[in-house]
Length: 112
Image (cartoon, rainbow, N blue to C red):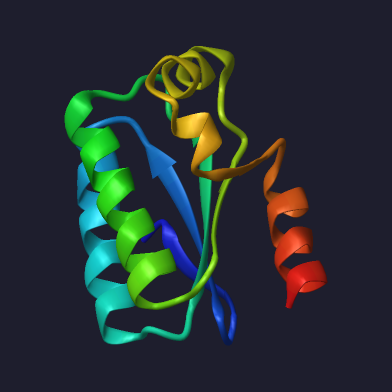
């Protein structure tokens, strides 16, 4: 499964294109609704496109993770094409984005 416990309070999720993207984010939503004390790092390395359904799931994830659970959500390794979608939709302004997974994980430790 692409959702792994990186540490006691950090989940690392390796996303892929649909239908895996939808399945993984749905599983992640179920996980964080049960365990509200976990930060999340999303690895977009294998994501080549986003559709409106993917964006809606990301926004729901952000709301649950940051507003409801008061935990952190980091997005990492976003390709140039997907980054274009983030820029056009304004998602770049509301998500914490890092060049790679290591940077995202490091930011959690520094903020922790």
